Length: 109
Image (tube, rainbow, N blue to C red):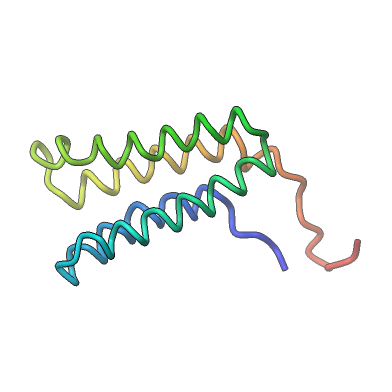
């Protein structure tokens, strides 16, 4: 089975964490979603691109989360979170996901 690109995991973690926190009105629950997706993405970044790149992308992930708060005051909550999620996704693709070996669609090894 093909792996989900780390870019999608990271972007989904940012958007999903925000959505869970917003709709349940329980910020720690949203933080749990954010942390779980960040950990899964970091593990994949490390496998695909090495420790330094994983550390840089993990830092970017956390900075995007933190940066979405002041950005939301200027552009609104959803545009801010989608913007930072897109930025993290693009960084993940550029630095890690596009380096991964392509998956054979026939499933042969």
